[in-house]
Length: 517
Image (cartoon, rainbow, N blue to C red; front, side):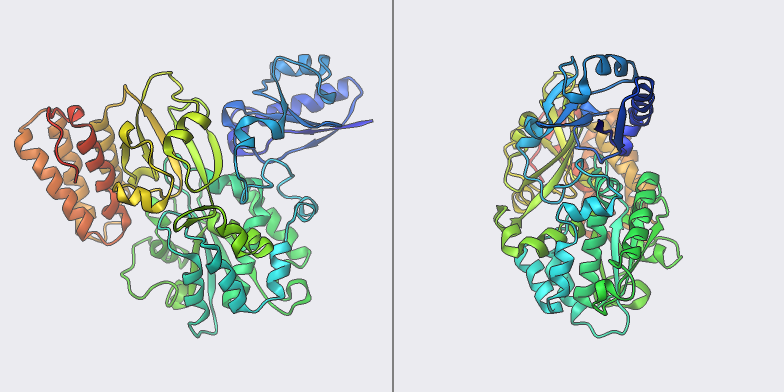
């Protein structure tokens, strides 16, 4: 008799000892003459329980966690291979409250399968979207994506269908698909989880995009700090090529799409699409002036689709189930689901995929369980280092692009970083301004000079020097950055700085709360 055991290969789980757990399980099974099949799956995204070990039983998969190497002997003694009771028992994985309350579309397979097994992917609805796409016209594919309401999940929230339609209707002998996988925002990890936990879904999404707009070459611009994703993507691309899901004749259709992974330059600014293309072309990552838009003149001057990982990984289910199926999730103009990433001072850090519409408070407390320290949550930064800090009075804001915009905040890539009441918001604002100064490409003066002067002014404010002069000066600098910067790095740095200043004036030594900008 053989037993099937799942131990995550996700880099977060590995950092917590998953590789050691897998080795210890195999060693203990051999010692006891027990035949096991050990599968390295993706993470379920419950990071406070990692490494999360699952076993296949007649009742379904049963979870144990967080498992340490010192627990292995007692797990075997408790007959965990058949779902035996143990102090680490969590019950049926699919019945875990954290997972059961989610609406996983993009993350439907992650945690369930071997990420680089093409057979696993095909057995779990993989490549159904591509099969449908191969039987549709280019316009029909673009219409399905447009009808779904899918918007860019990288932060800008631009309608994906409009971008694809522009590339489709721009005449050119050569077009490109670029996946922006340079995930660099603080508190974000959903792109990494997809690439490590279900790389074929990204490959399928990019292939559909290529067929839709007439592009035969794609590039995944991968963050250089993601070595596990690099290996998983290259392994999956090789298998997709061998099986005819990539190459010059996809599934005998006569349509071609080839895909390569290119490692990023280690610069935050290369997450900006034009800077990314400069880097892909072998140049220094400097922001380009617009127009022309990348959809008209992008990589090597050719029409180019640039989407982030989650956007492209959402395409297969749209082509499988239809645009209306995806559109039925969400609210207002924010359709479908968004993988939200809970991080910072939070009890239950992890990945939560939900339809747009849940409030930030529900996310923080119903899923996150409140702060890890047990203290009140003072502020939450949503949308990475360029996102605003939301005070407790804004926690009832629905997770929706327009609702966030109305509060002068951004939903961005869905990263949520929590801070308890010990956080000093002036120090955090200084960090955000210095971050801009360090990561600026230097092309435009407001970002290059304004950010440096900005954190110097914040230093003076923190030191209590001439607040009557320095606070207005900081606001003036933020106004210059906001309205004069070439790209979002300089243009959005005022969001965290001004939100901290407006909502938490006492941390800046200001007694009266100023008017919100």
